[in-house]
Every structure is written in C-alpha cells, then in structure tokens.
Amino acid sequence: MQFQTSYTFARSTDTNQNSATFTQTNSPLDLNNRSYDDGPSNFDVRHKFVASAVYAPTLYKGDSSFGKYLLNGWSIAPIFVYYSGRPFDGTVSGGSLNGTNGDTRLPINPRNAFRLPSIINMDLRLSKRFRFAERYSLEFLGEVFNIANRTHIFGVNSALFIRSANCIPTNGIPSANNANNLCANPNFGQVTGTDSTLYRERQIQFSTRFQF
Image (tube, rainbow, N blue to C red; front, side, top):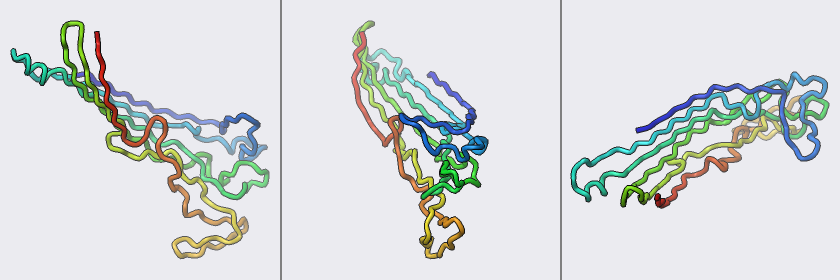
C-alpha cells in the first residue's frame, strides 16, 4: 500500500487585479487612494488538503492458477481534495456609491469580504490486471470522478444592494428607501454557477491498457 498527503496554508493579498484585452475601466474603488482596494486576492485559497492512496493486495497465495487470476491483480486508488472557498466582493447593482464611477463594491465592506463554499471532492479508480507472461499484462480500469456527485459552487449573486427608487418587499416586509436608494437584495449569495473544467458532476469511464 502506498499513500501520500499534503496540506498547504497560503495567504495572497493585493490591491486588486484585472486582466482584460482592452483598457480596464472603473476598477479601483477610489482612484486617488488605492489602499481601499487592499485585501485578499481573487485566487486566495487559504487551506488545501490532498490525500491519495494506492492499495494492491495479494489476496490469494495458493497454487491454483485460477485463484491467482481471479483474486490477485486488483488495485484501488482513491484521491481526496479539500480547498477552502475563494473570496468575492459584495457589490451594489446599479452604480458605484463613491462618486468617482469606480468599483461597485459596497464601500463600508473590505474587498473580497465574502467567500464561496469550500471544494470537497473524491475520485476513485479500480483496476484488475491479468499477467500473461513476465513482459505482458492486460489491465481493465474503472474510474469515477466526483464519486459523491457533489455540487461544486463557483459563482454566486454578489449584489448586496440594488439602487432603486422603490424597494421590493423581502418576505412580505417592506424595505424603507434611504438617501442612496439602496434596496437589500434578497438574492445575494444565490448560486449562479456550478462545476468547472476540473470539478463537474459525477463521471464514470472505463478503459483497457495493454503493457509489454
């Protein structure tokens, strides 16, 4: 049996970062004071834990060739990963509040004050190898990705408030307007994007490998 684990504690901060083909506009919260944008990076993942193992036992030690072919040559290999959620901003939909047409983040909140749910995933591989001679073997493999069929969240509604002259009641309770026409957004945090190229719904694949 072989196994390995790793844990990473990391912290990444900056004063906001953007990548765009053309000029990036309205990015800083305050064009004259970049310290307001100091905070966790968009890719700041504080905790990462990975554990994997390969178990290939010899189940039969007798003299029967049939027993050896049937019970030996099996291997199982799980891999488990945990990532803490990435940060995101709480914004104001409908325009910036800072008077400079800067970033739409709610000014009283620090940058990237909220975080997405953590990523928890397990994959599993089961294989059976048949040896024909010292040099040749045929292996059948079955692999399951996201074995628990867990939904991974990569995007949520980030609008904390909506600028509007008439606020929509929340749970039947009217929301009073204020000087900035800010209305609490009941959909804040609602999931808008799941899965990615790396973590998707449960997938199963089968393959065969001939070694010589």
